[in-house]
Length: 232
Image 1 (cartoon, helix red, strand yellow):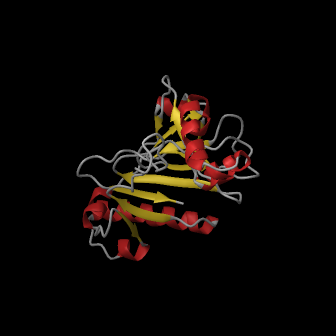
Image 2 (cartoon, one colour; image 1 turned 45 degrees about the vertical axis):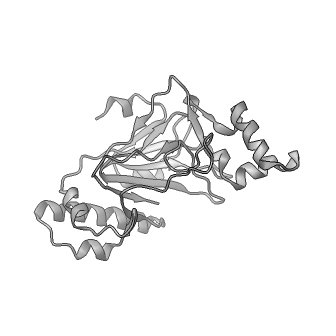
Image 3 (tube, rainbow, N blue to C red; image 1 turned 180 degrees about the vertical axis):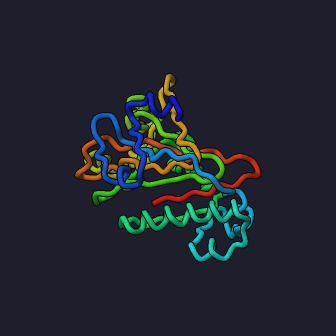
């Protein structure tokens, strides 16, 4: 088991799906990890799937249509079981084959794409679940090691110039354009990679949340390698 995981106050480790969904976030812990060493040929699944665009959704029937080896079939069974566990729990999982996400290049001083450290927000009580089965995996970072970008003076000044409206409406402007969801890692920060095969539950910003939302980012993809990601 990774010492990075076990040494972090931010991460709670669990051994079952039931523990993953029923354990409360508390204190500094805003990420729960069902730590797993998965067996199976997930690369074979990725190689057989047809990438229709940079991010292609894959449905259970697409997986079932693949002709796979014994190891490939084992990987497929794991994905389908995870899909069913999350669905039965009431979540809406999505399986994606990813070449890359869209980049935000509108402003050169602040990015609002998923490659930027960010938190998720929801008007209702929910959490983010994710598992990378193949390819590069996401990073999370402790809230104490990152600063909200809209609070950085030079960025805030430039955003105020773009807003060009009443000061009383500035905070609403930041929220409406998702600027307030993004963070900048501090120089001493030590992001933690979530790894491959583990199923994660990350705290989301919503009105009843008892902890700070988990700051995370999508990884830069490896050249010539697609990601296989379950998320909801």
